[in-house]
Image (cartoon, rainbow, N blue to C red):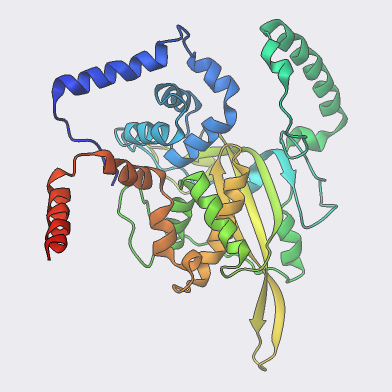
Length: 368
């Protein structure tokens, strides 16, 4: 439960709110929501993921209102999300149907369909581009025109790239029996936005908490896993970014038949399947090396978080509570941005009574 300040001292609070409005506007410039949506793609994807609400426009609005503070933007968007009616549940989305924009594997050099580098800063020098200081709409228009002409020529060369659909890398390992099959589980998933998290948590609860966890916290704990808290070095089997179609059943004629469903739009997601070496004991007592995997999926192009999520997914499966990164209560309770930021921020609120009690205890010990 997120902490919110209790109102008191109405005039002082009103003046504080005016002051924050002044700080946002004092330079006489207004950040257009469309400009934020167009130019802050990474931040928008992060906020949408942590808010569990897929809307680039509303994420941009929350970022504007929060003055770029991601924790505050997530708080705003989650608060808005809680007011929305839940009219439908979508059909199970299938990542095999993703129209891929980016697709790489760190496990194999050559994969069926090829590596698709897509949009990424991974291959840049991470140097400040001072040309952006003089960027104008005219220069952007010229660059886009040249890029679109080049892109059209490339698309015409490859029908496969046009479809954008690629086979899964892990399916080829499954055919060799090196990775276990994942049978379809028809069990209805738990919904952590409607019911409180309970322990032991189900797999669906774990994945939901991880995908809406604070990006930095999820990344930090995954890093701790790799550094020695219960897992050997994992390898990205496949990372893919792209659009996944979403369908809902007909509200008038409910049916499990896919042909009766309605297409309502696409969502952009990042999906990661992380390969992890594992040892399997056979019936004769011998041990056999195998491959296991962890799974991560987030809204938008959110690659670091999706990778970290897949690592924690596998780590939590081991369930050794003596290891912090395998303890589901430790991990799942501490990665939520609204919960953690709310609790830390509430320390700024009045604690006069409790502190005076502590202060009296300190004074008494000094007298003795």
